[in-house]
Amino acid sequence: MVAQAYTVAFEGVEARIVEVQCAISPGMPSFSLVGLPDKAVSEAKERVRAAMTALSIALPSKRITINLSPADLPKEGSHFDLPIALALLAALDIIPKDAASGTVALGELSLDGRLIPVLGALPAAMAAAEEGRSLLCPKACGPEAAWVGATQVIAAASLNDVVRHFTGQAVLPPAEAGEVIRDPSARDMRDVKGQERAKRALEIAAAGRHHLLMVGTPGSGKSMLAARLPSILPMLTATEALETSMIHSLAGLLSEGGISRSRPFREPHHTASMAAIVGGGKGAKPGEISLAHNGVLFMDEFPEFPRMVLETLRQPIETGEIMVARANAHIRYPCRFLLIAAANPCKCGYLPDPARACAKVPHCGEDYLGRISGPLMDRFDLRVEVPPVAYTDLDLPASGDSSATVAARVQDARSRQTTRFAGIANTRVNADMEGSALEHFAAPDAEGRALLARVADRFGLSARGYHRVLRVARTIADLDHAPYVRLPHIAEAVSFRLAIKTK
Image (cartoon, rainbow, N blue to C red; front, side, top):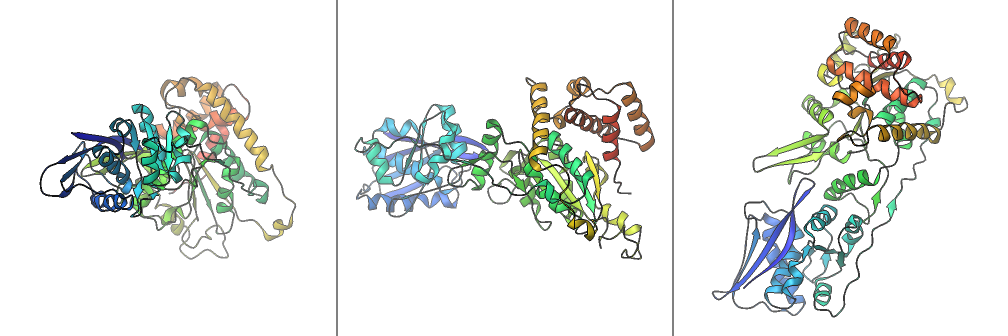
């Protein structure tokens, strides 16, 4: 007779149910594992054998066959240890067969039978809930998996606890969700002296999730401004927090099972590889753009990134997802992020300063910013120059609004967008508007339309650029509490659109 247990195999953020079948039959003593396992899964039989011995359970001198079904689905990771052990325990009649078949299990076994935490408990719990099964996982993974709330999560410290639970000797209580992690960021917008136009651009970017490019000399405050962007962003909604945490669970970034309501802020170095930025490598893991889902991706020294890496950003910016293609699988990750890019005006960084600029002016600036291709530059809704701040201004009192004040305005604008787009699929903020929604909600008045037509004709705006100006104008109108897009909103959106040219 064949005993079954269930676990999951990960394809991106999707967890596919895998049936673990165990058959014990007469024949030469052996322990075989089939079903397209990788090296870590193939080694599970040795860990399972040692853990069983630690529990004083002797394996029979028969042929033991473990099949991971579907057999054509690649199986990767050490989390297959626990379901293999469960199927084997059920085949040996040590635990009830129906107990193993009603549970989705994942966990790595140590040689003494302890359960070691693994990645992906949150998406595994989602898959278990969809199948109507409970989830069994290591104790350290319980608080993370319990956030799903739609299925029972049992967290055990060892294989011995699992046996005692299923045999009724010591039933384990359901795991409780971990604490909500809050980021006690002390960075405030009032710390930035001057740079009022850049602060305004950050506020608009935060309110409508518009991509922003800042260009300025070294030390002008570009990184300082970007680091304070999280302080004005609204907290993640429950749906967004779950989406983001599923990706972070696969990457092992969840701390002690807690889910953060703060938006991710990722800042990869310009030497990062393409796999690190867009995803890939062994197991096709999520990259920085997916780890920044529902948050911010800050790319400092933007032109210094490899050209191929920059060009791969074009499609994810438009679609909000990335497809990592491999020979045996195509893995899809969500990546709806807010891109903040910072760049010097030229290689040395002092193009605007006649006293310090090199002899190659102005071609050095054109060549340097020319590393940002036209199609990629076209995807930046907001472009702003960040001029240097005089040292005499650094002693002046703090000016401008605090992060709390700006965050309140941003939250109010986001609330308007939530109400506006209720019932419209895949549209949460103004940057997502397209088609009839864009024509209906972002249509300017007659004067605004006339101005935009003149700008489009004079500066050769692309269709994408034309629509992005309308989206930014709609966000400016939301910050202005205006029900319709008017001439001043179009004018300000255009001023940001045309602030920086690569040629």
